[in-house]
Length: 190
Ligand code: AMP
Image 1: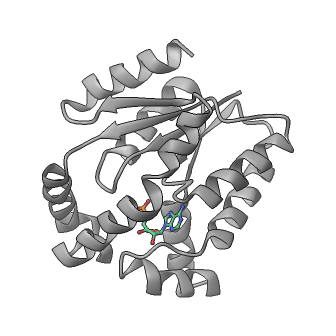
Image 2 (image 1 turned 180 degrees about the horizontal axis):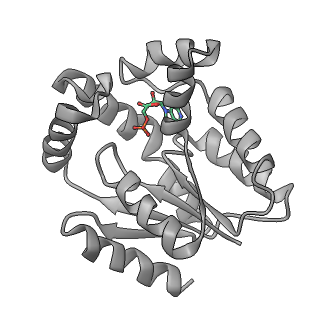
């Protein structure tokens, strides 16, 4: 099984690259942000509670996203592999993911990190906010909070995979196709 964690700060291009990777490698795309936004648009209680945090740029509780991922793994038993996008975002989530995959006799193949400077991220997110309709893309203060959450809680997740010798970093600035080629080279060398 090919199980990839696509890693990087908000606006690094994880969603864009995921779309290309699922086609090429026949993977199931699990984006916790997308799953949460679906809960919001369906008006579920989980969605209503998560929205209050998401709109402020704050992470939702670990147990909420771990439960969502666990359900998705169970409902995609025949998948050739998964691409985890926006998850794990804390070390506790990474530990839980290892446990969930182990119980299915599987494991993470590699974390691929997209490296993008803070100024480029801010520009990309403000641009995306013009037509994404996402409240958390709409103003610079909330974007700054999301980047702060990333630096405090999510960046340490890279060390978790480095310690397992499963970390690879890619330059996330350039054309979409060039970045995709770099990611594909990493995957083909696994
Ligand atoms: P994203 O679409 O990945 O940028 O996520 C949007 C928002 O959803 C984040 O700012 C968080 O509030 C929430 N979220 C998404 N994934 C996670 C996660 N793995 N852990 C905690 N919160 C998350």
